[in-house]
Length: 182
Image (cartoon, rainbow, N blue to C red; front, side, top):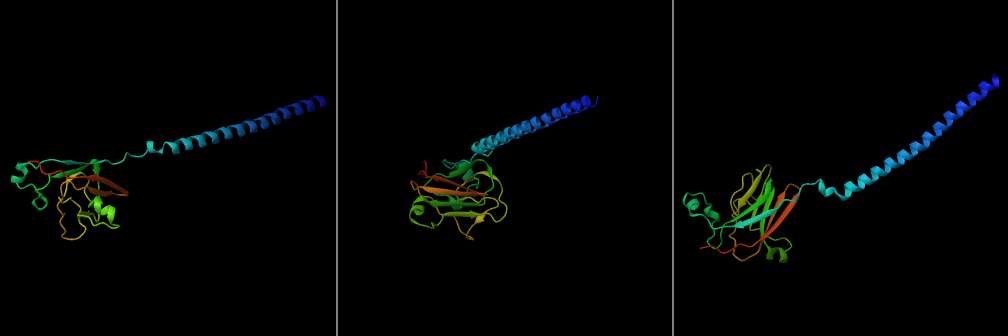
């Protein structure tokens, strides 16, 4: 009887030992597979990170003849009226909070290290989110960088660059004013 119990105990302990060793091997395999899945998932997110970011902000401009009815009612900004060009509207694909806005002739950018803007607005604290604005008109929440400065008139056929800071983003858009439509 003693031998039977001893043999039974040895066999049962061998079963437990073999299970524990196979579960350790299985555990190592599982950890290896999990690590591989995490690495491949991380690589996938890294390669496709632009899927999770917002699209770039698009800037456009439009040049249209001024409507006589707006000017007759006094809505037009007479300080920025330019008889040589049609009024220019700038717009974004969504509402943005501008922190700085500059218009600089491209020729000045190409020849000068620090070109002077012909229109320069800044926001000290809070600018109102806007989707579009006219060249030279005041923008709510922004003021000229130099107190009392007025925007210079645009010349037809000259290439200009609009530089807009929207939080950490710096946006640029080149445009060329067209001569006034009769």
